[in-house]
Amino acid sequence: MKMKLINFTTRFYMIAFLVILAIWSLVFFAILKYNIQQNTDKYLMNKKEIILDEFIEDGLKVDNDFMEYGDFSIKPLDKSQYRKDCSIFSDTLIYNAFEKNSFEYRKFVSYFDYQDNYFLLTIVKPTYETNGIIKTIAAILALLYFFIVFMLVISGRLLTQHIWKPFYQTLDSIKAYSFTNHKPLHTINSNIDEFEQLNQSLKILTENNYKTYISQKQFIENASHEMQTPLSVILSKCELIYQDPKLLKNTAVEVGKIHDAAKRLSKMNQSLLLLTKIENKQFSDKSSESVSEHIMKIIDFFEEIKRKKELQLTVDVESNIVVDANHILLEIMLTNLIKNAFVHNVQQGTVNISLKTNNLEIVNSRQLLPIEKERLFKRFGKQSDNKDGLGLGLSIVKEICEIHGWQINCMMDEKSICFSVIF
Image 1 (cartoon, rainbow, N blue to C red):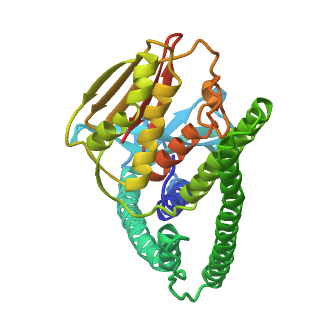
Image 2 (cartoon, helix red, strand yellow; image 1 turned 180 degrees about the vertical axis):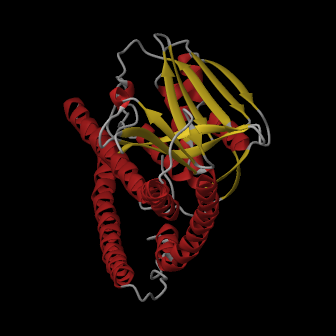
Image 3 (cartoon, rainbow, N blue to C red; image 1 turned 180 degrees about the horizontal axis):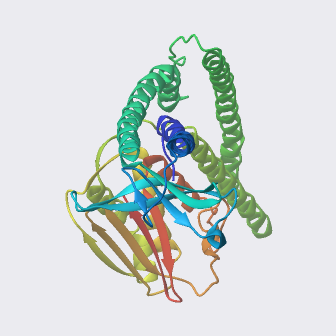
């Protein structure tokens, strides 16, 4: 999933910070709990020494089976129950009858002997207050962490927006840049070396590309003009030779071949020049154009082909369908599509032209020749037996659609082919 750089960096740092914070929190609470437990165990050990000292000093005797005090108890044992040098720490729950609830305690059990008598000492210390303190610390730290994350995200975005402002300004300048309306890139000076190097490199790159574009444009125009002049001369000379009454039949046939070849070369030259101009975006002027009016006007141009091939024409065009387009390119695109439907048709075939809202469909019956769909819009992708075709018409249509942001599709079956343009 694509996203803006500022969102990507913010998300990355936030996730990294949260992961590090989570690990650190676990380690912090583990160390805190361990230290508290160690201090509690140390307290219980000291408590044991105090109890034993008092017990021995006073010469206390255990008359009952169980002597129980506030937080410790001493229980006499048989020798068989005695376990020498045994001390056990554990966590336990003790029920409080007054509170009617069980609470957490740290329990210490130790065996000792006195005057050949054996005893079991049990000491407990409440830990629920300590656990409550830990929970309070955890809640406070959670709020603190949330605040830190929130401030990092806000400050990070504001800082990143400020730091990357020259980059986004440069990006907007590149998007608005056009060879046909050449202006130096407008960039913001930055204290960051990488941004300054980027701006300087882009300025040099655009200037060099503009010079190359101008040089290429002039070369193509000059070459096209220089090529068109001798072709026009060849065509005019062929026509003059045709008018010679002494022209032999065999010679007329050869002259006809020369005339056809020169005419075809002239059309190819004009089509390639048009493609180049379209690719160089030399038709940048746009206006509101009525697609309906253009279609009805173009259809009249092919009345003769319709009559010769005995074609059945169906036109379903909604009025007032307007698009924002270059006048010349829109007319060329519609002419090529409609001409394609008439010229590459069969005798007594059909042509259906439909224009609904933002969708144009042109369907025509087709010749029973194999057609490679992937080659239809490629240059010189001619796939018919029409000798006058150059295989450039549909490639011009595709270029015009792309420059306007329109979508062109082709669907076909054994009997018909359909071209649709979504404006």
